[in-house]
Amino acid sequence: MENLELQKTANEIRKGIVTAVHAAKAGHPGGSLSAADVYTYLYFEEMNIDPKDPKKADRDRFVLSKGHTAPGLYSTLANRGYFPVEDLTTLRQIGSHLQGHPCIQHTPGVDMSSGSLGQGISTAVGMAMSAKLSNDSYRVYTLLGDGEIQEGQVWEAAMFAGHRKLDNLVVIVDNNGLQIDGRIEDVCSPYPIDKKFEAFNFHVINVADGNDFDQLRAAFKEAKETKGMPTAIVLKTVKGKGVSYMENQAGWHGKAPNDDEYAQAMEELEKAGEALCQK
Image 1 (cartoon, rainbow, N blue to C red):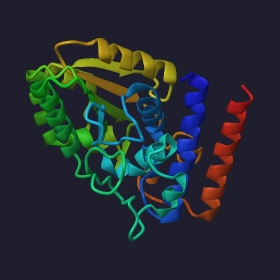
Image 2 (image 1 turned 45 degrees about the vertical axis):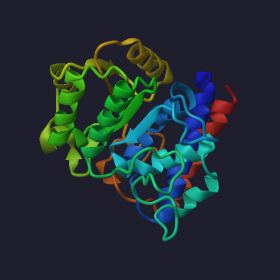
Image 3 (image 1 turned 135 degrees about the vertical axis):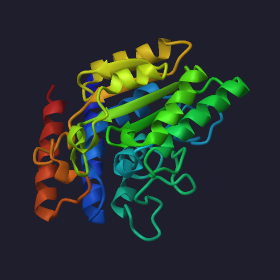
Image 4 (image 1 turned 30 degrees about the vertical axis):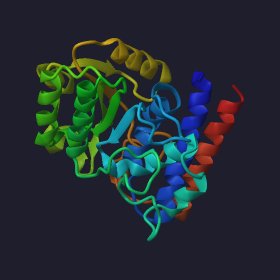
């Protein structure tokens, strides 16, 4: 898919995120929006998947370790054809298959229930190890928040992955610099992120602009070519990317826009989509 098409798709995914969180009157827009581009690249370009056969044995696996950004994953899955986009307005409603955190039992395309921070990467490492033991060719991708990597369990999993040389594993860190309580460096600094993963025998790729598709493409190509060790891709992103008043604001980590804010966000995203269509 060309970059322009990926940009258009990411813009639609952002609309879905804002729509879902507004309809639910709850949710996590900031980190969903910062990761919209990497979600788009994974599901529309990188991964071996088939929406018509969500459980096919040789599919690549994705684990959303920062499970609170489920609106981003749901919007991506909907736009990729796993279920109707209209379902997004049922986020967090009783009886909906789209709950506040991903649920493997109910949502097509979800490979692991997640949300307890630190646990998703452990599951992803287990999946990657399973593939090695079974001589299966699928790859495993997991997305972590930069606040999430303050959890000790993340580094236990990283230690195991590096020791076992799991080169079918790609750990992605959405480094938007903000968590629920403020700047990650003020709350409990995980920096330097790259050196920490290197210490656990990871090949590390720093991406200066994790919202840029050329840079994402280069990073995932390099990850695929890396043999004998797992890869960590550290993406520098903008929290709330695409909605002006949400960008780089920790307050939008976990709250829903009101009707006026929703209207403004959708107007901005509509204009961004129109601008892309004129290119």
